[in-house]
Length: 508
Image 1 (cartoon, rainbow, N blue to C red):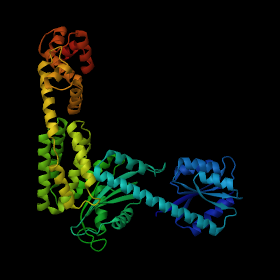
Image 2: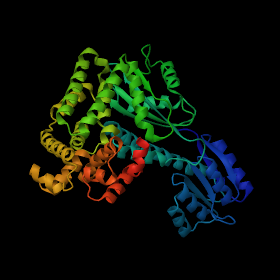
Image 3: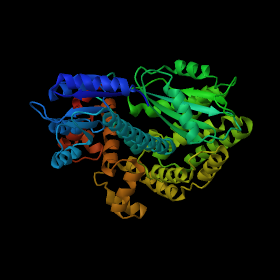
Image 4: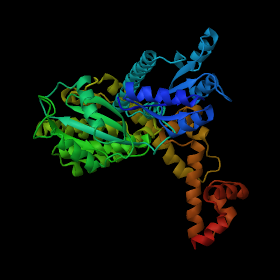
């Protein structure tokens, strides 16, 4: 536990000085950062320091100790409070407990009682820190496996619970440590030992959140101020002797290190995670530049196929991707952990999550089922088998038939846009579907309402006619399926922020 900070609030200077001296002599791990004679000075100090404890006299001029405890509890719920009182009254103690006061001391304060009360506070802080760390580790693990934005928001909220209104803005770094093949004794104790070393690598480090990312890989998110750069992290980690030339404990030898630069907002975790993963992948000897470009092209192509509900194309891309991963497990076995991480990361990326087509929704359901089946520690052979089963189990046959229907409807719209009577009911008759169902299917498949798509086709054709012909506006209106030139002009101006004639003048 790092140095703990407290303030003492009492309107009698002699008592403030006496308590400060006792604490400095008997509790050296605590630092008295300020002594205050009244509540206003205490509230000011609480904004300046990251306080763990306030020792408060119950009787003070102005705002009394109970009122101050209530105010501090509302502003800083994580701060512990000990009340000093000259008399013992049950109702006052009961009120104090409601305001988050964890202990009280009778004046004159006895040395042993003071030490015991502060030690009890230390235990509560340790218990709170353990619970907070476990919660953060759980959220980090859930986010790591699913890349779910809701989990990221929960992680952000959990980290924000400990925010203080002091000092510089917090920074974050991501570190991957890949251990040599054959070392599998990676458990919570291992993570805690490594986290302890990481805390010593920069003065401003506040928290180190670590998880077992895979059988031979650990992931850490580090929170603090003045964080090292990517290169500095790598240098400091290597100097500890954890690289190929040494080990930090028997049997634990690092094969590769992946570090991100520091970032200012937890929303940037996705990018920092990817940077650290890429760094680890490259450090393990992989030709990451080429691999990253191939995967980038694949995910873009997959997104396009999902957006247009092209199931055959999506399946072909995923199967080829899976085959490449399987092939790598034989040619570069040491890199397979990182490669599997990359695949899972891409499958849950914001690019895929943002697509609203029916096919994309089906894929997201399958991805969720995949990650739910994965064990906490992603053993390469297990996750590789799970990825293979995931890809081979995908079936988009239902979507293929629906895609063909919508493609036919789109073709009919492009062919018959000039028909003023063209509507959803007419098209539904041609494809033998109920108009309401066709409307829902069109929206799910294309991401657009039927009327918006029809209007878009008509407006694009109107622009072409205005550019390439001298037809009058009412003639253009009729040519693209509108009987009212006024309504046509209104729609055109809504789409392009110009009247039809203004557009023609600019186009020429």
